Image (cartoon, rainbow, N blue to C red; front, side, top):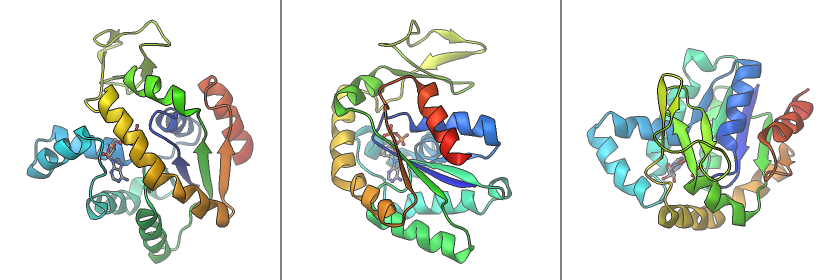
Length: 212
Ligand code: ADP
């Protein structure tokens, strides 16, 4: 089962991926998480990535492709995977097809989560994530705030979730990522998940219905 999530920053790709991990036990490949962990490692590459990501720009295609390729070819992805945040432009979508062709596998489902654009800024700017279990909450829509405890962890905010960077990320999304929706529509594997502004569980139910 190979699944891909498409949608703007803050649409809920990460939240839905986590629901699927629980249900199907297949790993999530989030290029954002992979890049952030490279930054945390304080490597030379990590330091270069930090600047690019804090401006809301895309990281070079080759770097991202290398990270994804390593993961897809690893034993943990044998039974399938959930791609979140990749591909993000047409060139990455084509590179992914090439990569999958060489190992004879295909993406079976592409879920596009449609969320009204006016909500996306609040979703990102208010987003807080537990630094230990990865639980995602929002300061605008829940009682949790940055710095609050979550079990053994603490809720933290991503460095690129400020209004200026989010606005740029949304602009780049419209220009570069939106066109790949049609790419997958033409392949007949695109499923649009509607009501993205509603509760996460309703979206999960739509996704489970399609998968079953
Ligand atoms: P979001 O979907 O909320 O924007 P991500 O965690 O997926 O957040 O990505 C954070 C940042 O990491 C992006 O703004 C971009 O700078 C970089 N990034 C993630 N995935 C890719 C990718 N496939 N290609 C280029 N840059 C990427």
